[in-house]
Image 1 (cartoon, rainbow, N blue to C red):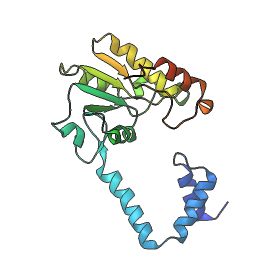
Image 2 (spheres, one colour; image 1 turned 90 degrees about the vertical axis):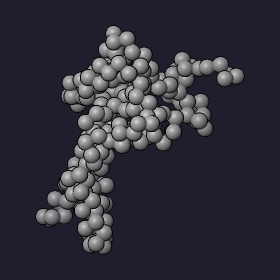
Image 3 (cartoon, one colour; image 1 turned 180 degrees about the horizontal axis):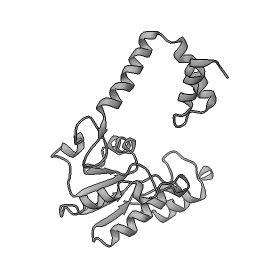
Image 4 (cartoon, rainbow, N blue to C red; image 1 turned 120 degrees about the vertical axis):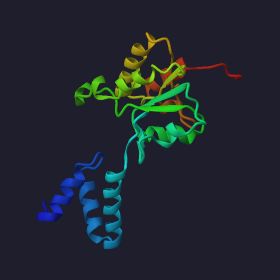
Amino acid sequence: MYEGAVQELIDELGRLPGIGPKSAQRLAFHILEADPEDMKRLVSSIVTVKERVKFCSICGNVSEEDTCSICRDPRRDPTVICVVEESKDVIAVERTRSFRGRYHVLGGAINPIAGIGPDQLRIRELLNRLSDSQIEEIIIATDPNLEGEATATYLARMLKTIGITVTRLASGLPVGGDLEYADEITLGRAFEGRRNALN
C-alpha cells in the first residue's frame, strides 16, 4: 500500500480489464517516471476519446459521427451482415480483406454468470435491421469460447424462423499449429468443418 495519489492511481489502473495489481503498480510507476508532456498527451487522448467517440446508430461500431465509415460506404454489400461481439472484432475481420458486407456489433456475448443476457446485447437492433428486405445473409462471427458459442446458438435459433440465411464462421486448426497441441473442441471442429482436399 502506498500513500494518497499513488495508491489512488494504482487502484484506478487496477480497475481496467486485464490489469492485475502488479501490472497496475508497474503502470503507475511508469507514469510517475515518464516525461510530463507524454503524460499530458495521454490524458488529452483519453479525454478526447470520451468526448468525441460514440457508437454508430446503425451497427454499434465506434465512430466519431452518427454513423460509422463502413455503414456510410456505398461500396459495401448491403445484403450481408457480419455479427460480431465487439468493435475490435470488426477490425480483425477487416484486416482479412475477405469481407465486403456490413457489420452488427452486439456489445458483448451472453454470459449468465456475469449477468449478461440477450436483453443486454444489441439483438433487438439487429432484428430491426432485418426488416430491410435487402438483407439475405447473416454471418455469425462470435468468439469460439463458451460465451460466444452460447450467443451464436441463441442467434441462429432465433434467426432461423425469419427465413434469412444464417452462417457461422468455420473454426479449427490454426495454420502452423501442431495437432498434438490442439484441444479437443478445436480438433473436433476441424473434423466437422473438413472439406475436399482438392478444393
